[in-house]
Length: 357
Image (tube, rainbow, N blue to C red; front, side, top):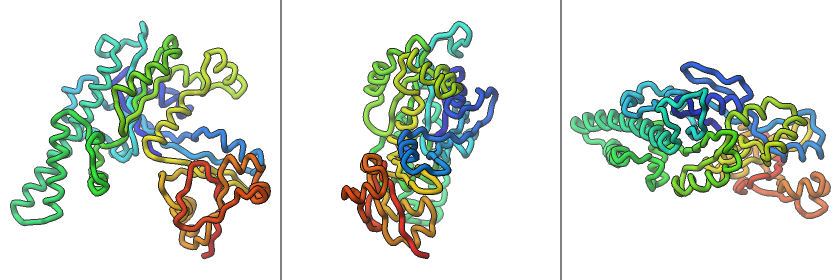
């Protein structure tokens, strides 16, 4: 999973990036990239049963890019400045600032998180509009010379997207068919990507996080957008503590769990992702796939040879695996299933793939 972190200056993007990755906050222009391990308590429970040599969590690739203009009217030429890595991201994380500070001034002079989100969205809309208009112009020039049914279908799609963007609304809000979404993928349009809005709170606002999330989610409405409220500064401090210190700190702050775990789960939900596990010597490992994928598709994520020589999948749901202490107990309790290629993998499945190549 690849997530791009963007947002206006002084919103806390780099602090959030540092909190997520464990790296120091970085200043300056350009894109900063890091892989982080996805926290998942289920791995520890599986490892306690199997005692493997290695535990391998799933990974998320974070890209921190500070290129969104605070004033969207200056973003008309943004289309040419957006790095390809951002266009290749699976989803965008837009950080908006809700905290006051006497030390870090807001570029606009007033803290207004809703306004920051509007500005960020408009900057992305303008960038996408430039991309769509440029491609539409080339398609129309070609169609004047020769007829092409595929290009005519593309022109129809581009005109629809252009109308949506000219109304200052993102592509993700359109009701598109699977074929239209497939056509979209080649354009790397930013407003077509799922959007996770992170409202960056001050320490004194942490107690209001649930209320703020509820209010903002109502504004975003249903669809490919979600919201999480957190204090990036506190999250960064949590990430720098040892396990024992972290537990005490969370208790003192009245925080049930670090918000970064919830942020990653929210990202999984937006992208329709889930985790399945392999649990045996030498390792217990989490794998990420898309909801609805089959056993043979999950096997391919591990290795193409496993998918090519697929015989069957031996499946135990996570809760049953833990309750019955592994494969022998699950078999005895009747919780061990044999599934074929077309089995739809569920979140938390512990799977052993049998194959022959």
